[in-house]
Length: 443
Image: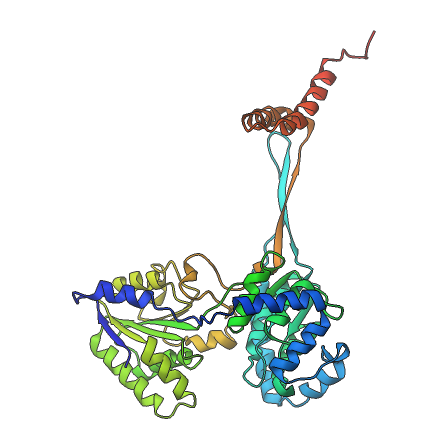
């Protein structure tokens, strides 16, 4: 049974704090192991990657077989049905259209002093995408990671995708092909992250690594950050649904289960001002769990981390939501747009009862790689912005330097940085000398 909380109960504040403080992330002591793997890959390159792949994925590779060949990709892609291909292509089209609107514009302007200032945006040169492997891998995640990178203009995009026992998901390879991925390596784990970050003889290094993975992958991403950029350290999935009593309880139950079935550590929470509706949704969840294919996983998630919270009104529901800062937030209320105005912290918001979170996972258009574990308080989901950098531009004219240079010199002196001040003063002196020359030069 999930937790049932009511904001009018005397112990609600403590119970809600406990709900917020639940530790759902996997926390095995993996950092030392990962540090050793990264050091090994840095020292031995391909040999270490191949050895570790044999150990963990039961797959014998050579430097020549680390990457899928074009012929291998074509053979696997040919296994995909026309219906699955059409679904992937529709998803890709919508994701590409949405992310194309995110591209910022370069800018340059002239100040009254004559100085010219601005910025320009340029993509990272190469990015690597981690895709969990085997038949459980998700082609939708390939699209969500690769398409923004390509829209941003990343010239080289590499995927690492473990294939335990040689098992390949053809849909993942098709998604990579549709998204314009350049290289696909059949490796995974911390060794794949190390190879992307530091490079080997067969795998050139990248500038940014994105994509989900297990505790070892997450630990590796933490360790290589600084050498390369990373997107985020994602935790278990989560969904918060704010719903009034005018919804179908079974629909809301299925929305809650859509995240619970991901992982036993996932969290699904319903907030409603209607206590009877909350009980009806909980009953509908129990009913669905009798037949759901992944009922063991979803049931454990709902039992251990699920919650139904009854509030006085929707305003209170929004306030609690902002404290939770959920990865996914559904607003199944009469006026979702109005309620959304009160939401300040959420990875993604789904407006109205006809917008299930699952649409966002596949074909909605916005990205499904989102901040978890309350990190939506300070971070955003994956976007084109993750694959571009802003470079500032500045050009001083002599007049502009004369106008603002003395202030720069004074600030440099106040910070005891003599060369800073002198670099400005030398130019100001040259201007003063030039201005002091009589017309026509010296007599």
